[in-house]
Image (cartoon, rainbow, N blue to C red; front, side, top):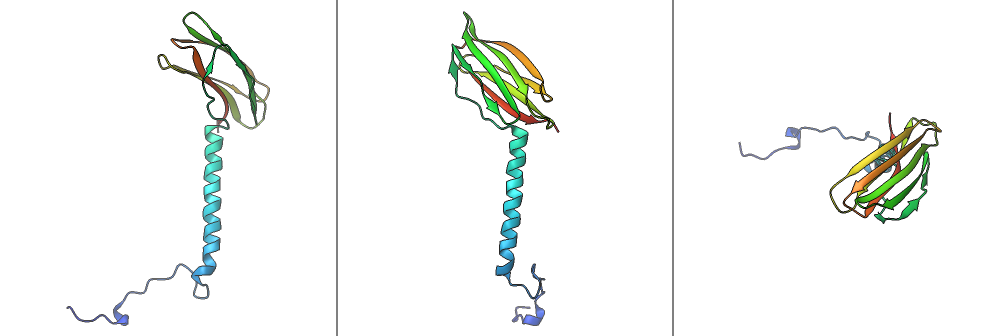
Length: 147
């Protein structure tokens, strides 16, 4: 106990690369695999979470007609005596198993959120919401994966 350790006493750990490969030669392949995996993860999360991000708050009156790959929408924001009214439609434009959605949230005032979806190419869904206690709303179109 406490003596010197000889190389024969060490446990040999197998190399992750073959005996004829150099570590430097396997790094590009590893890098390519990691980049491919990361790209796939980013793409998958984009499909699951949507293709558009929330718009900045719009005050009333305002109007928008956004179009994204797979969907389109049109909405108006109008002032009322109690808040804002958000109304319009959303349409799915692709046969891809995904849904076009419109989401609206209050901007100021009490927290409020609502979402409507259109699923199936050509399907159009109308919406008409009243958001109390505010004069602005955030409204956006996005595509959600339903698979």
